[in-house]
Length: 252
Ligand code: 13P
Image (tube, rainbow, N blue to C red; front, side, top):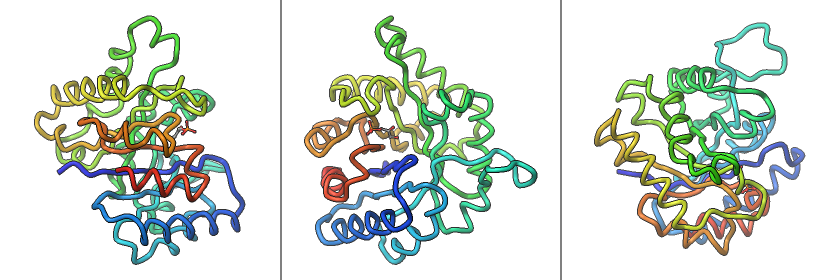
C-alpha cells in the first residue's frame, strides 16, 4: 500500500528553542485535527534531531528525519553526520539528493547512490529527491532528465531495498520561488516516474510513495495531493510555520 506522507524540510533554519516550539505546535495540531492514516515527517537541522524525536514520541503518525548523511560508517570526516548517528537519535528518515545538496555541495548521482545504500543498510528510510532545473524544463527534456536521476540513484537496489524508498520530485524552478508546478505538471511527471521505476522494479513501483516538492502551500496542497500519482509533499518554507504545515498535513 502506498503511504501518504507530508515531510517538512526545515533546511538551515531555527534555533533550538524555536525548533522545540515549532515541533510541539505542529505535533499538537496534527494530533488534534488530523484524522487520516498518512504520516507527517519533520526534518529539522541535525543538532535538533534528538529533541524533535522526543517531542514526537508516542505519536503514531509522526516521523522524524535528517536532511543529509555521509556515505561512510564513521571516521575522520569533520562536520559530517553518519547514518548510525541519525539512527541513534531515533530518527528514521533521511532526505538524500536534495537539489540544494546537488547544487551547492556538488553531490552527484554516483555519490547519492552510495548514500541511498548506506541509509538502507542502517535500516532507515531514504527520501530520494529528483527534479530538473528551469532550462531543462524549457528544453522539453525534463522527463528524461529526471528518469536518469532515478536510474542512476536507485536502479542498483534490490527489490527488497527499493520497497523502502520514498521518492520526492522537486522541480528546481519551483523551490522557494512561489512558482508551483501545476497539479497537471506534477501528475504527468509522477506518472512517468512511476512507469520508469516499473521498468526495473515492476509492480513494486505501484506501492512507492512519490511526493511533490516546490512551493507547496496550504492553498495548493489539496489540489496537488488529489492527483492519483501524488502521494504527498516535501515542504520547505511552509513547514517553518506550524499553522501552515499542519494545514498541508490535513490535505493528504
Ligand atoms: P519550498 O517549499 O520552500 O519551495 O521548498 C521545497 C523544498 O526544497 C523541500 O525540500
